[in-house]
Amino acid sequence: MASKKSEQLLFGTFSLYPRTRPSYRVSLSRMGISYTNIDEDDEKDQCVKHINMGDVVGCRCRRSKMADDSTAYLTIYAYPFRKRTMSSRSTRIRMDFTFGCNASSSFDDNFRTCAKWRNVVTRLARGQEVAKEEVETCTLPESKRLLILINPHSGPGKAQQIFEKEVAPMLNEANTDYEVKITEHAGHATEIMVSLDLSQWYAVIIVSGDGLIYEAINGLMKRPDWERAIQFPVGCLPGGSGNALCWTINYLAGEPVGEEMVLHSTFILLKHRVIPMDLVVIQLPTMQVFSFLSVAWGMIADIDYESEKLRAFGAARFTIYALIRILRPRSYKGELAFLPKGHYTPKTQQTIAKNTIRRLASREAAGSVCENGVIGTYRTISQDSERLRSASVPVMPMSSSKHQYARDNLGMVFDETVKDENLSDVNAHSSGHLDENKEVNGIGASNMSYDTEIGGANGPVNHLKSNDSQDSSQASGSSPYSPNVSCSLLPPLDKPVPSNWVKVSGDFITVLATYQPYLGPDNLFAPDARLNDGCIHLLFIRSGITKKTLLDIFLSIDEGNHINSPFVEYVKVSAFRLTPDDLSVGNLMVDGEHVDMAPVQGQIFPQMGRIMGIQ
Ligand SMILES: Nc1ncnc2c1ncn2[C@@H]1O[C@H](COP(=O)(O)OP(=O)(O)OP(=O)(O)O)[C@@H](O)[C@H]1O
Image (cartoon, rainbow, N blue to C red; front, side, top):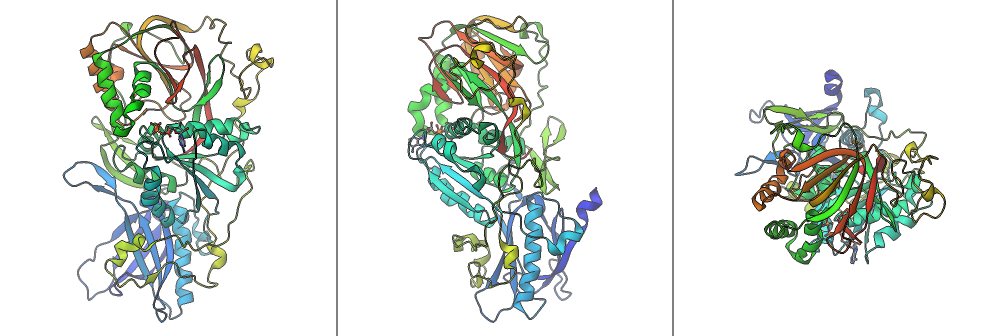
């Protein structure tokens, strides 16, 4: 396996722009690109340098603006980890490497060489397999556009600016075609997803907070073809104030969280991976929604909803409001019922094993290796190291016979939108002779149609099929729930839960059902949760604890240590029901959206959706 990764696929002699000397021997393997100075006169800089394929997002061929220059250029864009100054933490930084090919006196020949390298590098950077015998004929991956939905009012109102300044340049580096739509009103993303011709797009990318992701997912579920539509990949970039799903995706991908979030989230998108994501069907008396994040009641819901008035503070609004609510705690009466995944033992009867959480300690990246074209990161967990992402591969094979969306082969487009500042690292040392926008007539044109896609949607998951044992009232046509998803574990809300469910009643400070580790910046509520682990992670805190204890619990959420508290019950379940006693007080939040206070129940639907991420 190791030898296959290091197998040399291509090699050649190049210069390193902007200099024409020395010459470098450059070789390409599945692990990356290595280059060594082979100019005997130049004794400096003789060591082998390596660009890790896992760090590469894209590659472009270019030519000089000088008409008589026959050199063709290959620019590789990579985002390796670098230690931050004055910090033990690492974040990715942008680097570009431009190799000049001048082996022939003919520009066309040199360009063909660069195009061959570009095609192989682009595929490897996206984690696609390239066999040695395919190298000579390898083309760019097929292309479909990304639909970018931007909410101009999310978070501090900077989503559009963030996209234009930080995201668009990276998409261009990776030759990714996209179209931007700015949402015009609340509910617009739902409308777009209800009527979108999904076959024309690779994925929808939400540049907003979790509210717009919720709209997009529920828009897909409103379609007559919802069973297939819900498999349409959704990606996200942090433009809101909470951005819980972005935190989760970065965390589970082994990328840094909380620093340079836009850069790291975009980096993940450019790997073009799609992975399954659990959804939870949430039923209230008058509606049914499809949740990807959480249901919160009590203190956590109060912080989320009532801190809206502090929106201008960005993510800090949650911390400020949490402190206010810890000083003035409220409790709420109700009954919580749930169907545990295994045997449930209340916390008071358990031995609390402190410091045993296998959390991912995401800020302690210790190094990186490349595997399957994706960088894998070792993170320090206590004294051990745990390998993340080693098995990361495209979820949906390109050749899947179940692929439902017609492939869209776009013609060659030389990207006119790439601005000179994308070349700044190179041009800073040059007289700006490279001309990326100049069309290379006829050369390799058939190879230069490009594609943002490696996967696409798979066929629908069978667990969504109707189930006759489902509650009859919902199947009878009198149900307010649409579409008629088979919730075999959930009785009608006005009927008692089955006897194998556990019931807990009394006064609660908060109840949280979540299916993602992060629920917001530094809010690692369920450190063990994964995007597709088939579990609802149910946490609840009962009243009767001191403000100091409550403060300690909240202060330990950023590392996920709160689940070790004897006062925090934590259980993995398949379904739950929450019945508040008094519907006139408190807040109920589904995925951060406020809903009318009412009894609520939910059931997990493993791998119902698709998300762009790396696992
Ligand atoms: N053009 C618009 N004008 C007003 N509201 C909009 C517009 N586009 C979308 N919305 C609404 O804005 C709401 C808030 O968006 P979103 O949740 O994405 O951001 P946020 O609340 O800042 O982030 P987070 O949920 O991460 O805290 C959504 O419920 C959405 O319906």
